[in-house]
Each structure stands twice: as structure tokens, then as C-alpha cells.
Image (tube, rainbow, N blue to C red; front, side, top):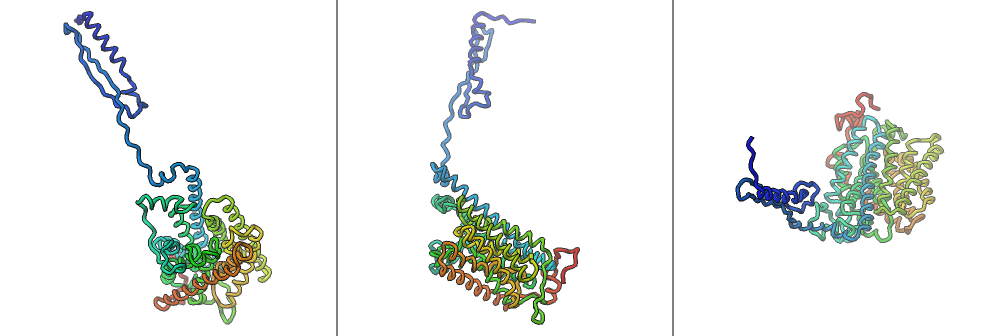
Length: 495
């Protein structure tokens, strides 16, 4: 093998080249953890000796710092909260609680579905469930399209204090001022405009759900859907604006979470609908009351417990913040009133009917919850027990009274929500922070408006489209007649 002859000068150049290469900072080329701002520039030199015997390639790497990218501009919301981290944390918790409360109120619609279907005949179960599905879907969309801005008009009143035209909710915000005004505590200390809307929208559909139970088993589906849409979209926001939207009742009238604005409204709208519709076939025969039993007391019981759970969001969320004192107080007064209502109705029905009636006990729990709703934040725990107990007694006698008057309400919705909603609102003037005369005026005005508006609405729909199914369809069941779909196809329907 031939070897290359190397001169001492060539060896020296090679050594220099190797030293240069060894001095190159390897981390600048290969280290994966190197700062991303460093850019490596390489230069290459060819070194030879005078004899041309040796050639060495030397590479020199130089790290050059890349120019820093300009910092991103903070969003309007980030800029608003800059330096206010503690306040932002509180606002976040408040808004989160409002959204969780809205979810609990949504769950109440499952409770209504179970109660109404359990207390009615099995042959009408699909119809009852369909109406409840329709109500929550329609209610959310109608409230978004018109109701929210009609109920909370700000300065945009058409008739100051009494009526405001609605409009769709915003699709979003692009201007910095609008973003801050709607999505930070500039809007409200407890929630953004989105948190506000979703919580209030869950309430809106409740009024129509109350009507659904009272008119069950004999109303045309299409006629009910039309009436429910009109009432939720246009009537409910009017009375809601009177108190919660800064209207004529907002100064002294107190209805914390809606004993009148939600429950009495729905109860008296249901009363109007029942009067126009008439009783179920076979309910009142030869001057006597014939009981038409519900098909599933377990389902009705499940529904009431779901409603009780949802009521913690209904009342607790109405604090409109996660204030630890008020939220915990509202939870206590709500629970105690519901429990007292259930016991009072159980023992009252036992005394009057000679047997303890489960349906009365269940309605007593709901009556107690409705009763305390107006004053859950201002009535102390033991007076709340009294409010709930009186509600439980009232509901028993009210259900019996409407039956004697031949006003057919299959689930007792008029008594639970209407009559006990009135009582709960008045109770704030007795046990809470309200003025008794103002409380009476407010609950009468709201109830009267709901009754008259619904009476006209159902009357017009009856005249144009008809309101009641045929006698044959009622006998066969609305599941077959309206839907062609039985809820229990393997069982014989009640006749």
C-alpha cells in the first residue's frame, strides 16, 4: 500500500484545522434544547500546504441571534383583567356557578317529563314526552330570537316600564368596547352576557311545561305547539320585564326566583287553557268525579326528585353569583320548604281522604318548592318551613276544589304552580323583606295578564284550527292518534 508523504508544515496546518473544528459550539448545531432564537451560520475554508501534499477542510460555525418576534397584542378581555387576577378569579367562579345552575334547571325538564307522563295514562305517554321535548327546544330558540331582549330591554322600552320589542341575541362582538362590555364584569359582577342568557332561557320554557301537564290527554299536538310558542316567545318576556327587566314592578316588588313570574304565570296560563279545552272524557259523569289514574307512580316519583334536585339550581342560581352566604342559605330554605310541603300534604291528604295519597305528597313537595321560590334569599330557615308547610296544605285543598268545579287538571299543575305561586309571593310580605300590599298587587297583575293572554290565545287557536282531538282519538290514546307510536307497545293501554 502506498502512503502519502506529509511534511511537518502540512501536519501543523492539519492540527490547526482540527483545533478550529473542536472549538465549534456543538450545541449550536445539534442540541435540541438550544434556544430557538439562535441561528447557526457556517463558513468553510480549504487549507493546503506549500507542497500541495495535504488538504484540510475547516468549518467554522458562528451563532447569530435571530431578531425577536413582536409580542402578541392582548385580547380586549385579557387587557381588561390585566393586574386584576383576584377579581378575575372571583368572576370566573361566579360565571361558572351560573352555568352549572342553568344545567340543573335544564334537568328539571326531564323531571317535568317524568311527572307528567307518570300521572297520565300509558296510552298518552309518547304524546306527553314529545311535548316536553318540543318545549325545551322551542323555548331556547324563541327566547334567543326574541324573548331575551324583550325581557331585558335596558333603555330600549317601547312603552317605558311595561313593554319592549324583542330582537335576536348578538351573534358575537368585534369591537373592543363591546367585547369588554358584554364578556367581563363590566356586564355584571356575576356573569357574562352568555351566562345570563343561558340561565334565563332555561326558565322561559318552564311556563309552557306547566301548561303541558294541565292540558294533557286531550289537546291537539299542533294547536298546543302553536300556543306554547306564542306564550313563551311573547307573553312570558312581558311580565318578566316588569320585575327582572327594570319595569314598573322592579322598585318594591320582590320575586327572587319566580314564584309569580315563572310559576304563577304558567299556572294561570294553564287554567285559561283548561277552561277553553274542557275536561277529559269520562272525568265528570252524572255530577260525580271519576278518578283517571296515572299509569306509573314510580315514574312520577322519579320526576319529583329530579325537580327537587333541579330546584337547587333554579333558586341557587338566582343569587346570580357564587356568594357563599346567600347560595348556602338559599339551598337550606329551598330544601326545608320542599320537605315541609311534602309532609304537610301527606298528612293533610291522610286526614281528608282517609288514606295517605302519594300523588298529593309529591305535589306537596313541589308546592313547597314553588312557595319558597319568591323569598328563598330573604326568608329565614324556620319561616321557610312554615311557608312550605302551608303550601303543602293549600295544594291538597286546591286540587280538590278544582275537581269540584269540574276543572280537569291531570297533574295538579294549576294548584302547585298557580295557587302556591301566589301564596309564595305573598309570603315574602309576611316573612321576608317585601311589602305585603305590593306583593299582592304584583302577583295578581302577573297572574291576570297570563290568564287573559292565554285565554285569548287558546280561544283564537280553537276557533281557527280546533283545540281538541276527536272522541275516538282520545279513547284510543294520543300516542296512536297523534304519533302512530306507542310508548309501551307490549302492554295493553288503559281504557
